[in-house]
Image 1 (cartoon, rainbow, N blue to C red):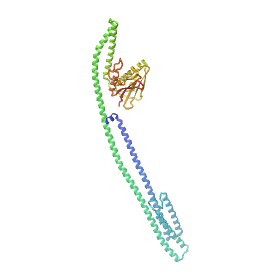
Image 2: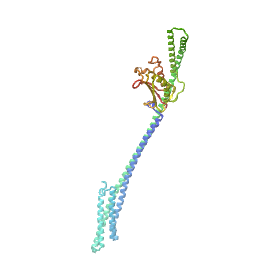
Image 3: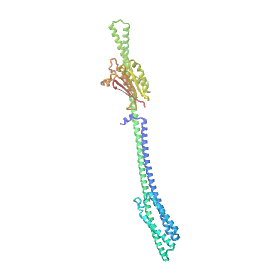
Image 4: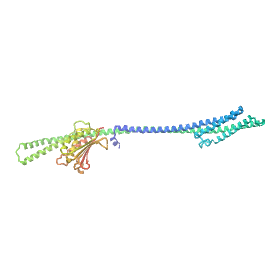
Length: 467
């Protein structure tokens, strides 16, 4: 599996993988930041509510203390009107503070099901009732409505009421102190919850960071392993290409030796037959046989020449070239022959460059041979379609397709069409498509033939693009 992945491996794929990993890490970091920020905002809001409650409690306690003051100060000041005015103002302020408690979401009668302030209201009502009684007694005394004995009894009663009023105030303040402790406990609980959340977040971030580091190391290790596999595959391909060149060179030497051995006596035969036809004395049957010898000799010479072309290893070094441009030039070279036979040609070549590293003349000759093969099978007034595009299955390859509208090919013969010297034509030599296959495979490509739609056949040349 690693080898299959390495076959598709490119240097930029590693950076794409790292970029995807970075996007995932950034997304996870933003999610963690959002969670922490949201928790902080919730904790800040809850602590703000608790602080508002505590400030309200402070104001309420101060109001209770100030509300009790007129009932005590009247014993020294004896100013009934002044103390009565103070008492009424403090009662109004108490109502406003209790109203503020409702605005904060505090129910003075039940306090959010956790704090019961009904005792506080009862103590406040008792304190107000007792304080009002003290102020009323001093008002009657100041008006001279009481005799001396009654005045002394009233003062004793007022002193007792003041003591009861002070106890009611102390009970109310004690109730508020209990409520304030609940508020403080609630604030401490919120801080503890937020601290626990931060601790969990810090622990999770440590694990996350460790995971990121491990994955990153794994990505680098896997990428390095893929790169080594890819380098080894590249080296193997280079060695295979060198071995193929060496084998072809050996085959070429043998073929050249054999072809030259045939060519010399063949040339003598052709020359002798031609001289006998031009200058010899012979009857009509002998002349016909000499012409057959001359024609077959020339045909054999042509076949020997094609065999030499097939076996010859290209001497020019490989270079980078645009496959689309080579295909255009090859088609243009065959167009005059197609016009002579009344065959039209339609081309469809991608505008984007398709760079091939190889021998441009051999690729051009391969296209010409495939076009010539289609031309020989296509009827007059038909059309040959030539396409050149990137391979849909693999973006690292390009496909040249030559499709004709001829009679097609017998499925039983498809496996043999690229064999050397195999032909279905009476005057064919079986070298053209063999040359195509040999040239394409020399470039680590492949040549196939398939039926065309609706009729005819297609020759497809698949070539790897330069990296």
